[in-house]
Length: 326
Image (cartoon, rainbow, N blue to C red; front, top):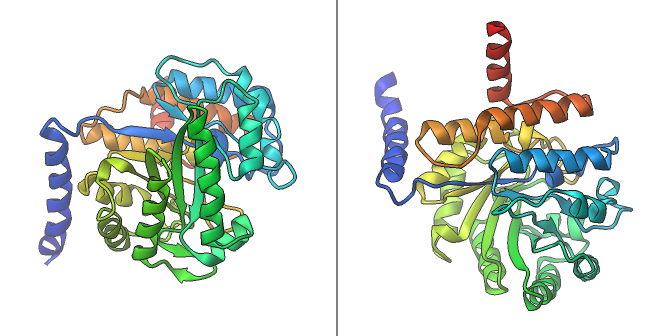
């Protein structure tokens, strides 16, 4: 009985490996969101110098995308008040993108004053409750605002990436209709986003609900237009990435050492740890371009400096193993 119950899971895993072994899907892009999404809700201000060094270390690990700041009001997100200093202080490595989050035209105007910004990210929620709580407006109004931001960014030659929040469920409205997620993604793509990241903001999704959502979203555009962004509240993030891989998606957001959470989603724990994601992807035969050892060292370094626990299981295992061999 046990083997019979495992057969569908085994089939799915081997199917994912077969997909990447065919040669067309060996590359996988990891979007590191730790310096922005991971730090933005920390109560204690992380020194600017530490943020800059964190971004530099992450770039040196081989990551090709490091989201490093947010152009939001320092009144609401004081952790990001040094955004310009951070952007101007990092070592910009060849082939590495350093996007910043921009919620509105006020943020966009500030971005345009900084000539070092080359890419922005915009975000919208798939539920009315979360949209009103997070952006103080309806989904429709939010999209109008984002359309203006995206248009201005594109006019100035900046790349635009989109985020969708609460794609599985909302802490205020309950379960999210996958059709609403698909419609939102279509709107973001139509305004010029080169890619849309699907965010399970409160981390309640599992294989079944994620697969259902993706099936609906992939009717709007092909898999290469999408990324996934899973929080690990219920320990399902890696499984959800695997489901996404089966659907053809080759981009996932993650946060070094599992840093992060959501201020508008009570109880939501951190993002999927980058180290755990990279470990799994490498075992599946994917090429991320990332040196896992350097990434693990970076995660441990920032946790020690912040005085917080490293929640990456991969990091804790590898660091324990390393300590035993000394």
